[in-house]
Structure formats: C-alpha cells, structure tokens
Image 1 (cartoon, rainbow, N blue to C red):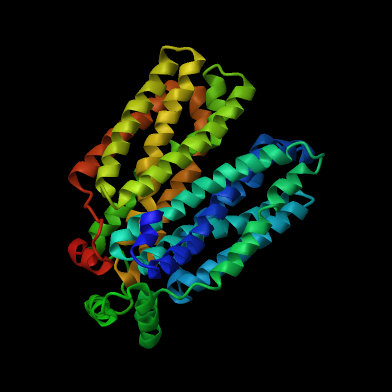
Image 2: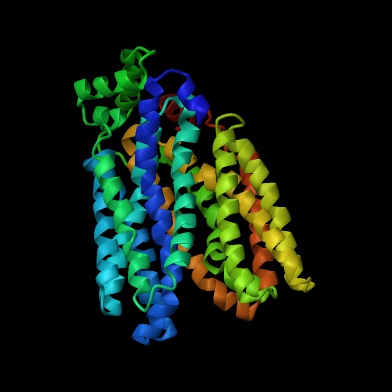
Length: 447
C-alpha cells in the first residue's frame, strides 16, 4: 500500500475511492459465508426437508447472485457505475435486516435473494468502476482490492459466526443481521465517490468527465486521454452488443477465465471445507479450525497476488496458479485414492487455496474488467460474471452427489485435469494486460 501513496498525494484520492468501491466485495464475501453458521439451526427450526433447505433456504441467495450478474450490466451502463454501487448497498442493507427478522423460510429466502442480487451486480459494477478510475500502472492492484475485500469479508463472517454462536437460540438472527452495519456504512461512503469519467464520456457528459480526469491524472493532460477515449467511441456503431464477431476474442477470454475459475473446484471447497476434511478423517473441531485456516491462507495469498499483479503481470500469476492447482489437486486426489492419513490433507488443501488466491482469485475480476471497450464494459463484465456464477451454482451443488457416487478422489482428479487445460489456455491464448491503458487494450483485442 505504501508505494501506492508514494507517487503524490493525489493518488490518495484514487486509493480511497477504489477502497470504497471495493467494499462492495467485503459485503459479498460476508454475505456468501455468513449463512454457513446459521444454516443447520434454520433447518432444525423450520423442520425443512434437505431438498427444500438446500434449494430454497440456502440456494435462493445463489440464484439472486446469478440474476444480479446476468442483468447487472444494464444499470451499470444506464444509471452508471456509481449509482449502481449505491443501489447495491441498499439491497445488502434491506437483505440483512429482512433475513434477521424473518419468521418463516420463504420470507427468509426472499430477503437472501435480494442480497444475492447485490452480490451479483457488485461483481460487475465495482471492478468496472475501479478499472475506469485507476491509472494503467496501478490498475491491477486497485481492482485487486475488490477480491481482497471478498476474502476479508469471508474471514470476518467466519469469525463473526464463531463469536455469535453461543448467544442463545436467536443467535442466527444476529449472525445474518449484523451485516446491516457494514452495508449501511458502505452505502454512505459510496455516495462520496465521483462518477466514472469513462462512463460519463460514453454518455457525452464531457465537462463532468474532464473534471474527474483532472483529479485522477493531475500530471497528464486530460485532453489527450479524452481524445483516446473518444477515438475508441467513434469506431463503434450505436446499439452494439458484445456478441458481434469483432468482439469474439475478448468474449472467449472472459468465458474461459470464468469457466476455469470454477472448474478448479474452489467454491466446492470453500462451501464444503469441513465436510471434505471430515471425509479425510479429521474430527469436527479440527475441521472447523482448518476452515478458519483456509480463510487466513486465502487472505495472505490474495495480498501477495495484489502485490505482484502489476509487477509480474496477470499472465505470470496465472502460470504460478495453474502449476500450483495441478500439483495440489493431484495430491488431494491421491490422498483419497491411497487413503493417506488425515493430517496431510489440510496441507494439500492450503496449497490449493494459496494457488487459487495468488492467481485466479486475484486475476479474474481485474482481467474481465480490462478486456472490453468502455461502452461495452458493463455487458462484457456481466457476461464473464454470469458464466462464473452459473458454474458457481452448479459445481458445488453436484459435489455431495459426486462424492457419494464416483468418490472424492475422482472428483479432485477431474478438477486437476481441467487445470491442465487452464495451463494450455494461459500459454496459448491469454494476452498480458498489465500497464496498458484500457483504450490501447481495446485496439489490441478487437479483431
């Protein structure tokens, strides 16, 4: 962080605005995991069947996320990045209060669904906003703050659940309700950030855009950047969409990075960490403790990823991560096949989490927010996000079934093989995007 502020005090503003927008990620991480502490109590309390509990009580938030990701590009383009971020805060606040006060599973599921919409939309609006206000040389680490906040939110939710666990039979209400506090604070903070200059230009609000550009790059001539952005817009046809032939390459890149992100098995692992460790022969208390270990490993290696992303570049991090995935997933798989004793399993899983955090975890939101032209960034981001979330809904929900049919060893072997394909994608297809302005990148990637 130090060197971010070293250049000159002006960059402090960009850092503060980026952190503010990235806090949407904190709420996303918190919201996703907070349910894990409450779900068993809720199933007992409402006596729901496994199917109803899984699909409605737990699953509704995920489907909200998919729909938020699917349609979130629309407000991001129409209302703008900033207004969308404000509405996301409102959705989180309503969701937290509503779920805490719910007295039946349907009401609870509806409010969790509303929170899900916020999560899905935040994966579009926050990275798009940060990538558009960040100077090219710092763009990776500034957009990376979004991922850092997701991971930080996950860790805080684990701790918060652990602390609130024993405060009586209404503990679950506090667990899900406490999120309203950071949500309300975030909403107020995000009201203070400026609108994205690149979005303002796509709406032809030139003088407003100039004002923001002057603050962002006080050393550079804002007119020069304005000309580049304008040039990019003049090559476009009104009412274009990302599915045109000339955008096929960035679209394919967004699809593949999101596809491989989930076919590493990362969400399956985050949701079922205690269960997987128990399958490997650890007793429950150490399995839970290891889940907090997973959170801490995730946080530290995400920080390392953010530190390296503008130094080594996106592609180098994806190399490191692909090799790390292949090695760790093969070891996890072998541990199940040859039934190695329980104590080695957490080590392999921590290796896997570290590989994910330093590569895919940090790179995905940065990369997707860079590869589309300004006027289509919202829809491009929405496409990449939707692929990610649809797979994030499908893959974890298949895990319990696959564990009991083909066995855990086969499941992890499949993930390892998919990561071999990811390595090929990185070697032969993935371009390096570090340090290049968004406008130059569009020129490069659009055929």
